Image 1 (tube, rainbow, N blue to C red):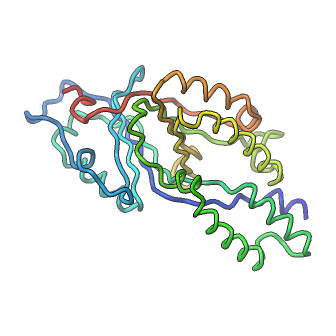
Image 2: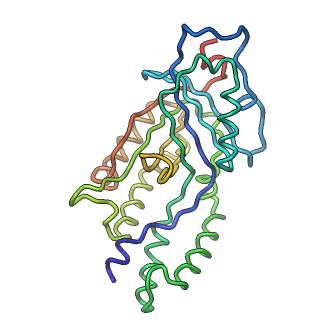
Image 3: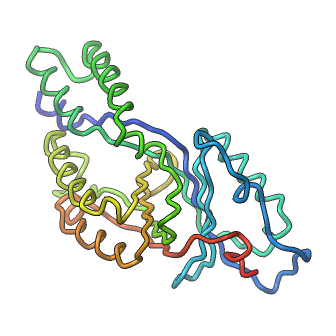
Amino acid sequence: MPDQIAEQPPETLEGWYVLHQIYRIDRERNTPAGTAESDVFGAAKPPAEGWSEAVALIGSTSDVMFMHCRPTLDAIGDVQRELARQPWMRRLVPTYSFLSVTEAGLYHMTAKLADEAIVRGGVVGDAEYVAAARAKSESERTNPYVQRRLYPQRPDAMPYVSFYPMSKRRDAGQNWYSLPIAERSRLMHEHGLSGRRYAGRVQQVITGAIGFDAWEWGVTLFAGDPLDFKKIVSDMRFDVASAEYAEFGPFYVGKVGALAEVLGG
């Protein structure tokens, strides 16, 4: 019985698909005269259709990052193709991309359902468990906090951006995926409380990438003061979920701007 609970992945809710595109500017490549523009960034969209931002990277070997949030994977593909047709894209050399989907991990709910299944003499994943998980997940989806995580709005007052991919460790004796679900739930609750202390100062967009990328999650932070990136990441790295079980990829930091400004005129 304990193995059933230990091996149970958390139930999750998904929202918008997210694509980060990162480029180096090749300033020796010629492009047609004129100001760089695109409806992908310039046109106002209804909130339900998502949004895109252009970011001028600072302190990186790359120069530009585009971030796109859309309701479907097909819509993300449409954005890619629309940008590929733009003459000014000839100056941009791809250096990295990251595809993911906004995610809310329901660790506490999963742990509770697993315990209930064992108590009633059932098994995790049986018909009663699945029905309860479906009903409770849909109820969680209406929670305003969960809605903000799944469908994040463009943070106009927070122009600075920090993006990085990350994964959980699978080392011998330090394997996140072999921990009991109750322990993972406790650690993620602690981790979440650390992040919530920065509410109003940092907007976090957490995305899941399992099945989409070699890294398992993406974290995009928006802030009005870039020093808050250092503070929130430092604080959260002392949480056990991060200190013992997290691995981090490269960090990309920059500032949101108009497309022409981000591309250098």
